[in-house]
Length: 184
Image (cartoon, rainbow, N blue to C red; front, side, top):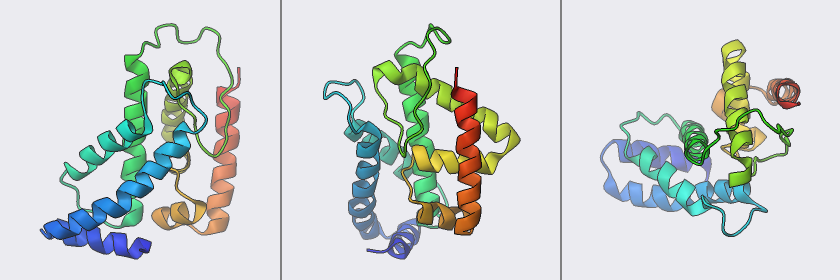
């Protein structure tokens, strides 16, 4: 099913078609689970927040909200923002009381790996993204979509209505800024 089909299902659901919600759930839940699995790739099996719990929480919040869905990009953009919020809340709940001590650089791979040991790094990333948003909201949003939403460059370009060359330039600058901000 193409991204346009997700947009159609979102609009049908918004118009009251409850059957479209079932079809939408089957489609987007798998994609959200794939994103969460990427986020948690390589982590211990016993870590305190599992990919399924992250997806369930994010999806429950998404479908429980009264949002005028624009398209697939809008949906996954909000999903990325919710996943980020959930991860930050989880890190806060697990006590980042000693923030600032033993600061470690945060690896800037294609995804952020989250574990209890990385709680401070998630909070540092969250703080840095908020700081970047004060200067350039679009660059912060691009990083959020990339790290927390797992969107491809093509999906990000479409969601943000950017050319691929502009997106590439923006994300390279944003990652460089973030790297310098998070380096000890």
